[in-house]
Amino acid sequence: MHELQQHVLDTFRAAFGGAPALVARSPGRVNLIGEHTDYNDGFVLPCAIDFDTMVAVSPRDDAEVHVVAADFAGDTDRFSLAGAIGHHPHGGWADYVRGVLAMLREAGMPATGANIALAGNVPRGAGLSSSASLEVALALALRHLHRLEHLDNTALALLAQRAENSFVGCNCGIMDQLISARGVAGHALLIDCRTLAATAVEIPASFVVMIIESRVKRGLVDSEYNLRRQQCETAARVLGVAKLRDASLAMLATAGPELDPLILRRARHIISENARTVRAAEALAAGNMRRMGQLMAASHASMRDDFSITVPAIDQLVALLQVAIGAEGGARMTGGGFGGCVVALMRASQVDAVRAHVLQHYRSPDGQAAIVHVCQAGAGAGLVD
Figure 1 (spheres, rainbow, N blue to C red):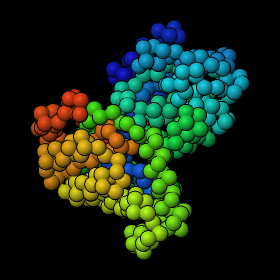
Figure 2: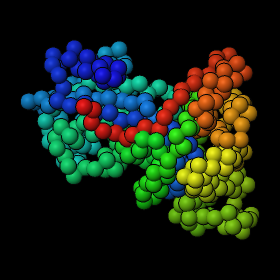
Figure 3: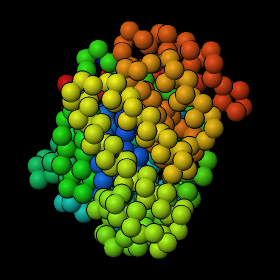
Figure 4: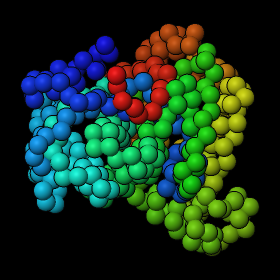
């Protein structure tokens, strides 16, 4: 039995005195290319990774929900489905649970309580979307528990996003929840964030995904994220389009003095990043990892120069990786920016040498070595036998 599965089962038994009715799992994710394009109705190319959250559930005969979180020192939460679901006094992990339950109630879930245990191995605070992994795993478990067949995995992803947007208060796009719900083993997904259409793109079997935590704490993310959204909306208004997804570089060139130079650079990143993401999916599908590496490098340069969301330590880490990997594969910052993680694609045979190169030559501004994770593209959410 998988170590994480055993952990969630042991946690459930210790808290509730028996075995659960079912266990669901949902993965974290990393985005290979397509940064800040999701809220501009654009394209992203993430893959699910082989780090998961598992949720064990059983029904109760009352309206109470009792939750235990193995990864937070066995912390617990209790609330009722009999009335409105309020926020936890201290927020945190419990609000993600409460938010999902609130959205499921709106979607027709009966007010029947549940015993719930949570456990996960998605690194928290690393930009690998442990929150979406939790939301989708919980939604999937309760869908099966209550036989809510009208909710497919895309509907669960949208429900989980609403929980994060309207209950937790984080204005995220749909990418994290959708790749967690619909990931395909061995593949990335080219997601159209306007239509939610997703095309599976195979990652060559000889290549792995390396995720490197820079140990640079992600400062300014919330305020700068919201500012970037506003700047993109301003650019779209000036260009006369609904979203920057609908704009072109030619339109940008003719806008001239109407666009503030800073707003122009922000728009240029989004427009060029959308095009790069589509071309990256084509390169990956063709097994052209040289071209994929070039597009990842161009994406990083655009995030650095036009969107201004990288920091010097991240730029240094990407440069180190690009040298160590060589022409076949590549590296770029991934996530909201201002710290966090770098994602790299490389041959499996290069992993040891690349890891050693990073651990020898990189230190964060406060002197910490990077944390390196080697992943395979995993499957999306499902029940655990």
